[in-house]
Image (tube, rainbow, N blue to C red; front, side):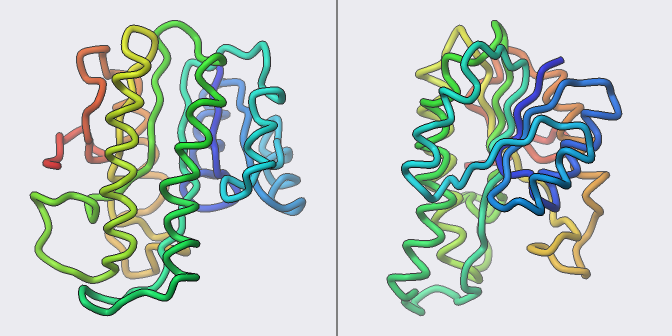
Amino acid sequence: MNVLIIGASRGLGLEFVRQYRAAGARITATARDEAALERLREHGALALKLDVADTASVAGLAWLIDGEAFDVVVINAGVYGPSTAALETPTQADFDAVMHTNVLGPMRVLPQIAEALAPGARVAIISSKMGSIGLRASTAGWLYRASKAAVNSVMKDASLALAGKATVISFHPGWVRTDMGGSGADIDAATSIAGMRTVLASVKPADTGSFFNYDGQRLAW
């Protein structure tokens, strides 16, 4: 199996690398700084320097992966931003940082990987249940919520554009004990990634455009 992980410096992305490598997959993974790239190499991945918030950096991705045929692609890069609730206006700097990474990042990456997908590939974007409109009962982190609702829209459009070539889905990874999720979260990264890998192995073309919990439960938009 040939796997590409976008945003693998730590947390969920690094755990994807660790588990897929343990399963014998060939891994290409991206990170922004040299320390993270070296960590990926130590895990046996081909490490590529990439910053999804930088236009020039992403513009070179297609060239770096030219000739590849990825069976699985996971777009994991993301930031939380401020924890402000609804009606607390974010600063322009915070808005730009969150939206550029969480929304524009995947919109930049998806066209770059389109020609490097194996027939029947699975493409996953790490979103969040916080982006769901139907399941929403809190306004905490409303900028992050807006970005994840937007990236679900990006994923849905990508599923239409890549219909017949790849199955494209969004994931809620669970509330995971990572730097972003905090120490009080529900599950560890190993549990989250094991669940998402199981889903990725089982989805069919008819599932494209769907929103899944890490355990395979379908989520409302």
